[in-house]
Length: 369
Image (cartoon, rainbow, N blue to C red; front, side, top):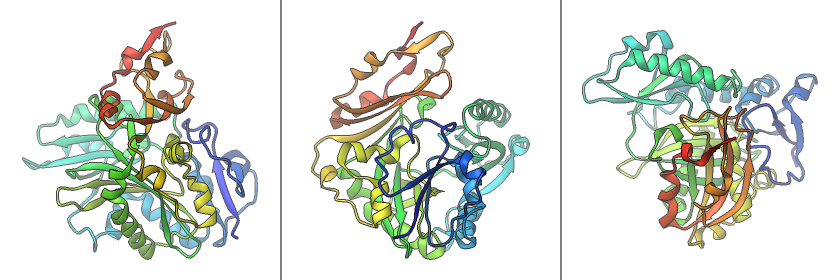
């Protein structure tokens, strides 16, 4: 069996490390230790990371074919070009932050503007021909500056922005791992409903029978196509999609060498016994019965810091948050003064109570110290 390596970075965004499964058979190395070593990952090595911040250190140590594939996925323009035969209607362009106010947007058109390197939904905005682009430039600059205080500058940068068409439809995320011969295996599928307050963009993802029915086969087909286009053997991939009005699953972006961040990719291990890292190492397909046959949703929630709260003088009220859940399986608190959120929660939730989570106003879940 091929060597299996997981590269971590404790200084990066919280959640991914604290929620990991047992990692039997994996060699875990920190980004800092890797930087001081002469270790390289040849084509026979299986490699994953817990955070985008570890990407630069790993990328230079990979074999040439996989390094080229990741560079294509990281470059959102090159990614769209690679998929042009399959998705000819998807256009994308890049602009500098300073060029944003002069962007021309036709009447009736809608686009998404986001950092070329981004994470945690930071500085992602929908624009149309009525958008004040000068104000948006200043807002993006501020949001990126705030995010870089917590996240690595290699994972988040606002100098170059991507402008792409807004795709109508519900958002989904899918985690896949590629065997050593390049065959994809889906290890996680989640719906990403929009919160009532857009400041909490990634507040909830959920898995369930309806999610699998909606996207599993199309996602597997997409990753098979992607693997035939790029050399992705022995790597994990986190894909973000929209299910459009015609029922087609359209890729938005693919993040290389990892499953869902902040612990999303580990959620089903705790709620349904589906261990993405075990299936990655053993090249086995998950048993989805614990998800398909459950009348509850399997929920991942990011407990955000309040949008207007002063974290220097206020702290989160965990008891108040817990009252919004049916069955909490795991909760992981963060240092809310060092992170953009105060924790993550994995839970089973009745479908009729999902909107309760989407309508949370986190300012109301903080109390004065």
